Image (cartoon, rainbow, N blue to C red; front, side):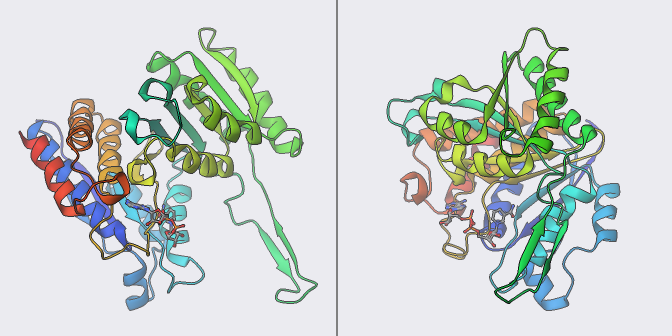
Length: 353
Ligand SMILES: NC(=O)c1ccc[n+]([C@@H]2O[C@H](COP(=O)([O-])OP(=O)(O)OC[C@H]3O[C@@H](n4cnc5c(N)ncnc54)[C@H](O)[C@@H]3O)[C@@H](O)[C@H]2O)c1
């Protein structure tokens, strides 16, 4: 038995609630199987809670979560009834920024040939990870407006890049490559049009790359990268990029590996804690219909186990997800007829076997 790990579970909104239920069942089954003590604590935050109480997720509570838990499992946040996106800002971005979760790891690992939308590509061609910088870039909310609501309106938004922030995400990408015996790291940038910010990125990248002589370091403009991920994804092993570019490229890349229903992510600070969540949002168009694919949330639960130091439990969850796919126990987005609950039950039962 290991020391008990405390996990905060925040299902959030829409399909976040449905898929988190199944991911929680998967993680509990894996913990039982591997003799891991987990204390799962469900927190009520989300748009429903905000509309009822006026409370999103205040900063003091975000910091308490950071102090009290080893990990966080998040569903999704976003509700059209909260027009200024306050809940998503306070929960999703608030936790990333306040808890300094500077690595956003997004694996793009095709599980079965039939799941890719790319002609002529198969499992071995689509196996890479994206390291997205998660605390800087265009997402800090620095900026303002003048003459708002008139035809003279001016809007300014700042991009932030620091040496420290850039250095630590690039270093993490190279460390990941070494640890996983990968030989290629590519930095995706836009130095030609945004020279100050991406000039810093390239200088830091070239400097860090010198410490990893066994890893081939390459540089690619973001527009070219969007094209190359579709044309020849086999060239990529580790991509490291800024917050905005990583956000966009990882959704694009998710579509060549089975879609949002299979895309998992981990927000990591190696010194403190990890927050895992599916890449998808709350999907209001299918919320309440019982057809949301829970596998991205289950794969996020596997990432959580891996980052908490339980790689065998992570592999057990991964294998159960694979078994669901290979036996056709999948939701309509993957061409199946099963419900969220049926797929979740299959995964949990497979883990427990
Ligand atoms: N991290 C987050 O919490 C997060 C991320 C993205 C979007 N959002 C929020 O979610 C809300 C909806 O955003 P959106 O519609 O642009 O993106 P979305 O990811 O919620 O949905 C995009 C499309 O993919 C489908 N889809 C997504 N997840 C699926 C799943 N698990 N199974 C089957 N189909 C799935 C949806 O039905 C929809 O057609 C917005 O409020 C947005 O701000 C939150």
